[in-house]
Amino acid sequence: MAVPADDLAAGHAVSNLLAEYAACIDADALERWPGFFTGDCLYRITSAFNYARDLPVGIIHADSRRMLEDRVAALRKANIYEKQGYRHIVSVPRILRREGAVVEAEAGFLVVRIMHDGAQDLFATGRYIDRVDFSADTPRFARKIVVLDSEKIDTLLAIPL
Amino acid sequence: MAVPADDLAAGHAVSNLLAEYAACIDADALERWPGFFTGDCLYRITSAFNYARDLPVGIIHADSRRMLEDRVAALRKANIYEKQGYRHIVSVPRILRREGAVVEAEAGFLVVRIMHDGAQDLFATGRYIDRVDFSADTPRFARKIVVLDSEKIDTLLAIPL
Amino acid sequence: MAVPADDLAAGHAVSNLLAEYAACIDADALERWPGFFTGDCLYRITSAFNYARDLPVGIIHADSRRMLEDRVAALRKANIYEKQGYRHIVSVPRILRREGAVVEAEAGFLVVRIMHDGAQDLFATGRYIDRVDFSADTPRFARKIVVLDSEKIDTLLAIPL
Image (cartoon, rainbow over all chains, first blue to last red; front, top):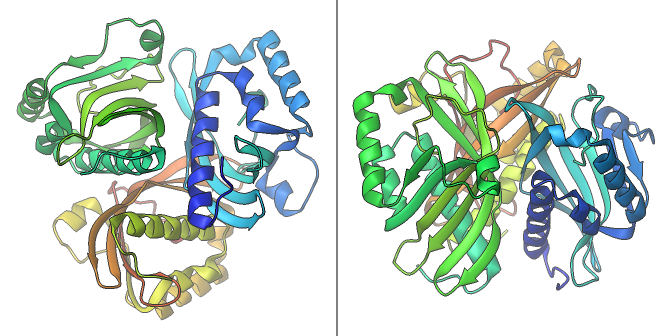
């Protein structure tokens, strides 16, 4: 895929990537999820409170694609995730920076959780702060920081966001 | 309208069509709703569970624009719908296929229901799996499958989604 | 910034402006909020019921950027807003009209409120009916009417929408 030549092109490319990413999780195709990241990626889920204070403490922290694969394997084994599904709604991303083949972007999101009995609730809101690498054929997340708006995190939080 | 020449153009066109479609329903302009479909369209509301198993059982099934017109007429007569309104939030669509003047796309959505007394709740989430026909002046849905995430469907479900 | 040459360009520009606007409020950067408006702007929050009947009564009504600055100053002084945050999810805008350097557009939105204790709820849904002025370097809202779907307005409504 071509490196985005301007912010408009970057916006489209990141927006499409986020749509694919969300659809993958919402379809419970978690085995494909690590493929959205580079090999030496950083993936972190944290809260707005901790992020604003630059606290390294996160809810989830992984610094390689391998760790993401391990997480999926653990999830499949634990089998907890089968009881619920997600629906992501992702906003139009804002392009924060472009530098060579790398684009930094931020996008708000909302996740609805659908329980096995059909009950649905507003599970999480926040924003993705992404660094996307366009140097290969397929754009991938070199870094993805998931900043949750609320401090009150469901202790069962385990499915990727 | 021109047939989209690439996925980017197709994405814009489908995204705009979905925005018009959602605005029509949310404005309770239901008489205009069947006009978004081709004459021999297929419109179906089903659940993710049934869709994954290819079960033909749907909550709503219509195989012509005429059936959609009949549905609106019935709704207006029954008058049930007056007690509530919708607000659709539709995600960026993913282009699944382009073939001639036809584009297949998928988009996540969330619908908030606003009751007459002002109460609002998360009514439904799911995805549209659409086949859009660009051969005429205006793009229209040749097929629209509404796949709801939850099995627990409100029995009063009657307004188009 | 260039005046949008067609509806597609206008859609991008308005979509990006709405993304910046929402991110500003959601980041509690309210001091920057009036900067999204022209000096002699009109900003109004009203309900769908009142808007449809052209009733001038609004929940908030301001007819200059100065009034918006005063509102932010009052909010900061009152300190009420510190107890909550917002997350906007804004739909793809529909272009209603283009005339010279002015674009009129409508976009659906949903706002989740995050309370200080971490509780989150569906706060408001509605649509923005915007008139955007592209004659200066930066596009700005010459008019922004926030039409809420529900009549049942939280009496603490004070943060910009």
